Structure formats: structure tokens, C-alpha cells
Image 1 (cartoon, rainbow, N blue to C red):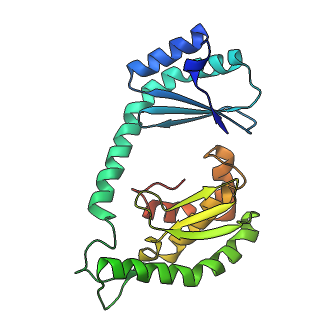
Image 2: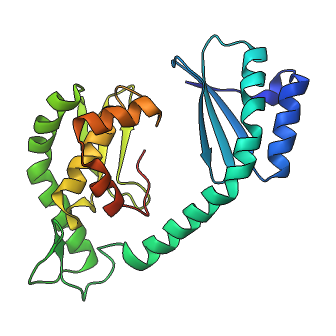
Image 3: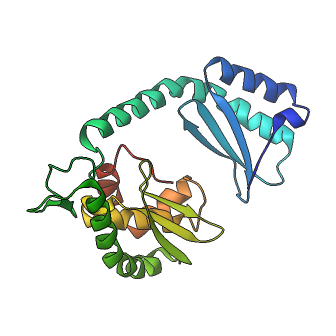
Length: 228
């Protein structure tokens, strides 16, 4: 994977025009060359991310981006509104389950009859996730058809999971045991599918849906945080 530094090379007029139009709308163009078959566009808050095949010509790239400029500018306000709504929803509904020591501990979505201090709660969640993690990966890896070399737990505040595709290493958030166990299963499926597709393309989501047809239910329960 290689990000393109456009300041280090001449820019085609068509591409320069696209960059200027996006910048005027508050959108940064980020282009990355990857081992992909097609050009993939992802519109994020203040960013248009474009993944392109390694050997695509600058002319093809510029023409493809030019065709998506109006789409990006038109839909960017909606993307921003959705992002801001999710952030607010997260603050109100999906606050850090380890933050308030006076609240009962949630385990797999169910309130327990005891409380723990924040550090104790994190240690408790780490232990509970460790108990089920290997079994869940053993269940879902054959279904997804992808296998991780390493599985780890990490204290992550903005993501439920991450995947290093080169090392085939999957990290899970220590906070997952606060939610129904199916949410953890969904995150595992999501990250394993990245071993097939290192993006969020249509093929990626189809692979997720094939492995776990009801994934959307558990995806929505984790709304407000990001998984990569």
C-alpha cells in the first residue's frame, strides 16, 4: 500500500481541478495505490479516500475522480451529519462502560449484581474476553475462510477491532464484553473479512453478509464507534 504525494510530482490539470473543487468544499483528496482490481471511493468526514490499482495511469485516475466530484460534494454534508449524530449518540448511549464505578457491571449485555472500579472493570473484561476469544475465532475462521496468525486484546476507545493484514494480526477492544456476545462475533467476522479485502468495498460487505447474514443487527448495536 502506498499513499501518493502529489506535491512531489506534476499534477494533471484535470486532477488539480478536482483537488481544488474538493478543497473548496472542505474535502481533502487522499489517494492510495493498493493491490486492488478496481478504483474504490470512500467518502469520509472532510476526506475523499480513493484506493487505486498499482498500475493505473494518471489519466485514468484523473478521469475517474473527476466523475465522482459532484457526488462527493453533494453527499458530504450528509456524511458529516451522520458522523456528528453518531458521535453524539455515542456520548449519550455508548459511553465507556468502564467509566462509572457506581453502575452495575455489564457482561455480554446483561447487568451483573456487583460493581467494580474502572481499572478492575477493564481487567474483568479482559479476562472474560480471553475466556471466549479462542473459541469464537475457532468457530468463525472456517466460516469466513480466513485465519489470523495473532489474536490480541487492546484498550481501544474509538474502535471495536483492527486488523493488520500483512501480519494477519487481529486486535479486539477490551470493552466488547459489555455488549451481547454476538457483537464480539460480528467484530471477529468483520476483521477476518479484511484478510480477504483490505477495504470496505461492496465485495467486503458481501463477504461479511455471507458469513453472518444477521451482522447488521450487531453492527448497529455498536454504532457510534469505528471498526477498521
